[in-house]
Image 1 (cartoon, one colour):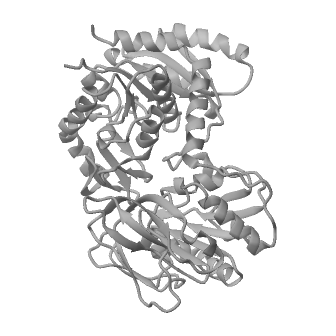
Image 2 (cartoon, rainbow, N blue to C red; image 1 turned 60 degrees about the horizontal axis):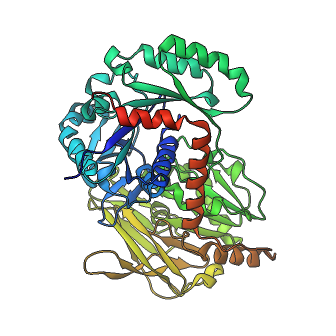
Length: 510
């Protein structure tokens, strides 16, 4: 019988301190060192999710970490996923299946009932893998939430995990972050912290070292790493991502992504963002929109609310005008639904009622309580308009939506793709719709297959009257592998890996 996996847990002083990145990097290092490793996060809150081969939904960060570990993503790695639908409520997903909507207060009272699901998932992983790298959430020092914690020290106690605490120096006050967190923990919780990591460091290390010595003396916890600010291109799931505000290189092709208030699955555009020919911008106002060559409408957790927002701030009118001037309009999932004639919500999946769409595609959408969750593969259909050169190219991705969309007319209308749904019976179906340089699809990751981005950019360049030089054939999957290796190489240089391995070997209770 296989022995129980060893474990290490990464907690942070705050959200976006770098827990997900450190976890992914450790997964890669352990893989490189010959171990079979799995990530784990008991409860994740994110709008960017991933669909497994079984059609189950999990947090995208754990899917990325699984990729870094070289293993197939499994819902066992993230048994609870919360997807915020508004300011006070979230869709609750347990073991990959939707349980329903809950307010923050309702979920807070309910969540401890999910501990058996958490432990069952964890122990299943522990029987298969050599090492489990657990990621916490937010901060363990949120004293108003500690009593019912199931994701930070509460989980560490349940699985007897040693902890490394990550502080974010880039946002200032890192020593106060680390010392304050330790101060607010109970003695047995503080004892679990076997090392601290100062993350996102820029500057002269020698100037920082006196502070490191003082914080070690003050807390009694060693600093096991000073990790530099890493320029590693990895998919993110957090709405706190700096991608939305980053100033990108001046590519010859200008692509604008509408930054919807409830934007989801913006990782769809990572492959475009990483291309040196592209200036990809996230915009949320008329002033920012300008005159791009292509406008992307992303997924959203609330189509009706974000469609109203688009209408109220004038972006809907601007997008329609851009289409008349020859700009390519491309909607994915919720963005596709918005492009149609009408979106109806008779079952109050979001907020009920019916709303006129943007009128750019001859489709109607009815929101449904049943969530479509599946991986797909296939080919682009016989497309019309500027992107006709994508016709017949292979594609792969996944669907995740609550709604059914029907084409209202067939004249001069093309579907976006002929796809096979990855179910037991390998269902064949048509996806999406295109007409007059307006394109809509339910397929997330539709740009990721090799050659698709190059064909897309070549079409935009031809429309603009320019020729792209030195177009690189880029496999997105191969590119991501290089980034995981870069992340691991950086962490090896700046983490005391001997100390990390000692924590894993010793655990907490021998």
